[in-house]
Image: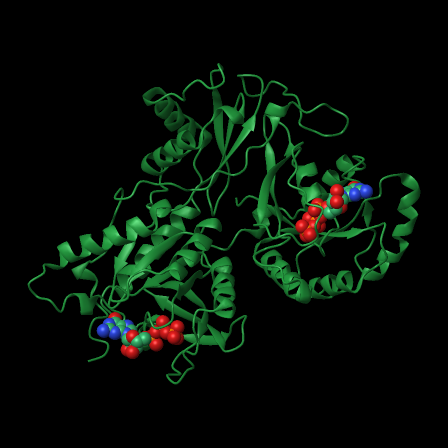
Length: 502
Ligand SMILES: Nc1nc2c(ncn2[C@@H]2O[C@H](COP(=O)(O)OP(=O)(O)OP(=O)(O)O)[C@@H](O)[C@H]2O)c(=O)[nH]1
Ligand SMILES: Nc1nc2c(ncn2[C@@H]2O[C@H](COP(=O)(O)OP(=O)(O)OP(=O)(O)O)[C@@H](O)[C@H]2O)c(=O)[nH]1
């Protein structure tokens, strides 16, 4: 079961980040008084049901995703909707009840109109009940009965959570059918051979290929079958169309690549070994990591690196693997594949590997297994004392898939350093079937050692929040160790496609 995702949209300054902090039970908020402050998308884990069967959803604030161009706020709205569209199970559309209905509110409503995703219209800043009646105007947005709330005065938090609980579609139903195509995004700098790769796939006899328009202009989604497994290469530019404008990886194409990444189950990040690695490659890889997408560094044009026959290919691979590991040191779990798109060498193998990553991302580990691995990890290397307090881990549970999302119940999240969290993540990857993919880790405070006993709630509804009882921000998969876990893919046996061009 994937972790249900609730995404917040709305024009600047309506209180989107305040809402996120308030629902997540955070006292320290990351709120800024300046409208449209650039910040990264942030997420938090919100608990719906208590133990013994804790139930969570992930709340994502899309405000200020990427750059916000003040002159073109609708571009920002576009990005929010894009994110919501590709990720949300439920959307919280926030407006400011103390202001009139703004054109930008209407623009958001307009864009949401075409989505199937359920939407709750949230009127924020209803600091006292008299303000609620101002909300009549927002019925115009065509979203039914809006709910007035105040993050500042802590009004209607429980009511909103109840509504979210009711509206959140049963994610079991939303599960992909087993035979659904795996979506792969082929991204990378211009000229790295992405189109050649797709064309090679499209020409392969045993692949049934069909095209249909992708989400962006000039792009298509290419369906194909490989050994009975359906694949979908998304947002592929100009398949079979050889004449194309050599666009630089500018703002537009980064935007487009990011969109493909968001839609993808697995990303193939193309690199050209003859060109080295640039800042733009890093920017793209960072985005992939931030989205917790399984990814294969696909080093194409490997034929050119083999030109020097004196250099054994393995040594050459190891050298380039080192370069990649060094450049993307936080992403050492991502496997590498060396391919020659032009001849088809390893093209099939890279797709098999993608399939394996896809499976890993969708695996669910039982709480028993997870806690056995956790106990062993802690026994091998206990977290160090901090602030004269002993960090304690009670238990862990996997609350979602794709990415695998694990909640760790601890005495106080503050006591756990990043390095210890990374140690746990690496251990999980090593001992659980998550070897090649990012894992999301949340730390949550609970006071008692035994699951099942009541814990104080970081509820916000009048209850005092213990500063320790705050959600620690998601621990990303950062700071891996260069050189660790390098895997090459160069299966001679998988050269079935190698004579395509012949
Ligand atoms: N009166 C009142 N003000 C609020 C409430 N919630 C948020 N605010 C204020 O509204 C302003 C904007 O809040 P943010 O949470 O930064 O809004 P945002 O929608 O995330 O804004 P952007 O980051 O620009 O997209 C801040 O000054 C908050 O203090 C509320 O319930 N009542
Ligand atoms: N030697 C060699 N050349 C390749 C290989 N794959 C692609 N090329 C060449 O690299 C050049 C760029 O390939 P494209 O497939 O157009 O690259 P792209 O990434 O789609 O480029 P954009 O559409 O500009 O983003 C072409 O001249 C290809 O023939 C390969 O495996 N080996």
